[in-house]
Image 1: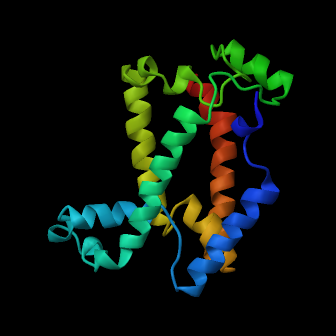
Image 2: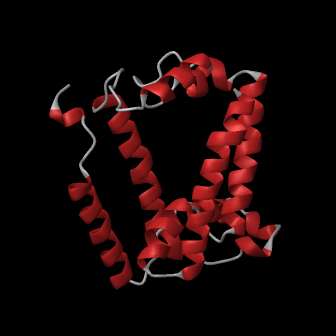
Length: 186
């Protein structure tokens, strides 16, 4: 695989994220993707139904550009900078455990088709997982006052204690999902 298809190393991407955060701090902005959902709902007229959506959404236009950039960047990366198979350095025990659960491309694909393929997301089980998971993520992001990117990148760089607590909760939830809920679902 050519070097262009490899993920950027931490010593390139990490300082770029830090530079972005310093720039946002200089201009008094904070980063987070879930705030875009609030902005989009406000643009759509949700302020008529809930006070939470009554705010000056035009002050958040810059963050909508971040959302558009993330979508375009993801599309460019998946369509032009990726290959079908990727040799990931997964523990052989993890690969064996995933193969037992029916994940035939374990260790060879970043996004398993058994979870994200059209067949998987169009089944009743897939639709229910997406619906329940989406509600839980939306509720959790609102209850935590932000999403993982907002707390882990912006909040921690601002040394905010609530963000540290939220990030600890995100990791605990991820461990709970990986070790207890995921095996139950698959």
